[in-house]
Image (tube, rainbow, N blue to C red; front, side, top):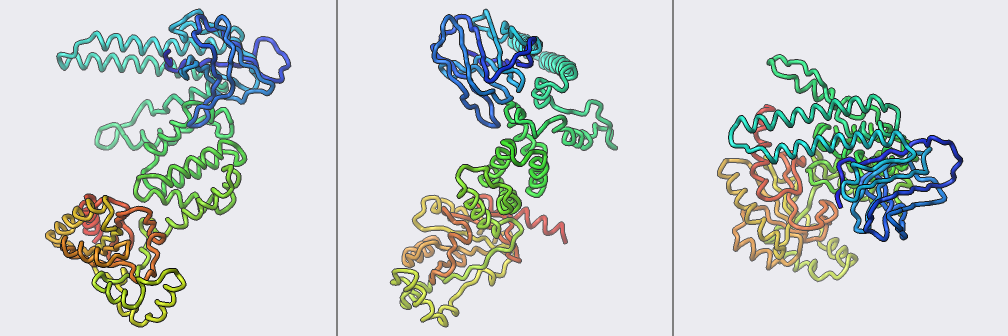
Length: 505
């Protein structure tokens, strides 16, 4: 079974008016091999099951329900979960009959018995598929032995693309204001056709980009639930934020707000978009883009604009708590200070009784009993004098740390050879002093080697150290310039930062 490119049918008003309280979809699928079939629908990034036909007789499939189907694109799905074809339902068309005599190329012969407009769209689908098939046939039969052969193939591809684009434009123009037009509008790119020349005589790429971005969402109705049930919508959103918007957290935040403002805040569209952006930028691997997540928390979750978008109300508070933890760790923010103890002072701390305290109450008593002595032993992060401070949280017994720490040592030594004013503030996350001192000696770590000897800092929460190692790079003012990076990235990042500083002087 094959999923055909854009094998979509459209269901609009019937030729006859009738009252209807539910839906009834009848599909005559010749030689259907299944004993059951599913009616599914697209919803943002998911495909969900709406109905099941458990009795298929002589290829006749019937889906019937008492309530109307929501506007959107639905699919007939086989018993093995393969899509036969897609079709449209809108608010006025809930009764539909489709038929095909084909047993293989279903999309080529599929017809709607009570929707002329749908049949017009099938012709569009067939045109697109035939053009693609013809090109693939030509490509497979062409031997690319010379540059001329490759050029010929490229020209043929351009001809096919031009033919398809012209056909789509005419089709869209003829179907403006219809559901079919809305759906295909999200597929077709809005590209500046006549690109002016820039001062260097080349096509003006900036003007071309500005046009593309400005018209990207033309004629897209964010208040229509059918838009969210369009299979092109999710990828359109994804592409916009990954490839069109300037790759900067502030730019992303502005565009997220603009898109959400286009929606009705009580709608499913708003709920899905906000949930999508929240998850995307909470889990992003792009350094610094957690700032978008914090922006969403501050402007939507804390203000009540996210109430009701999750079934579990506790999720909102969890998101706020997570964002508040990340806010002091954003790029460009001054790093929170740390009050640590040198590794070599482990025995002093042990003698004071810190290692024998069994709970927080006993630890507090030990701390205040020795506060004057402890104050003399602090090694504060803010006191480190260097152009760049590499802050690493790690554990001797951590397998990943055992690989990353030697790499960081190599990077540090290279930076020192290059006469960079760099220091490493190395925080051991456990309290096994002997083990820590042994590792320092064996690997000759020439760093500021410290640990939380007084149990004072709670670095796990303060620096979001949910696993080790975690590496930050701070500038001379202890502003966070990079975070959660690999040791192999350290040298290159500092080199880049150094060059930026030189340019700024």
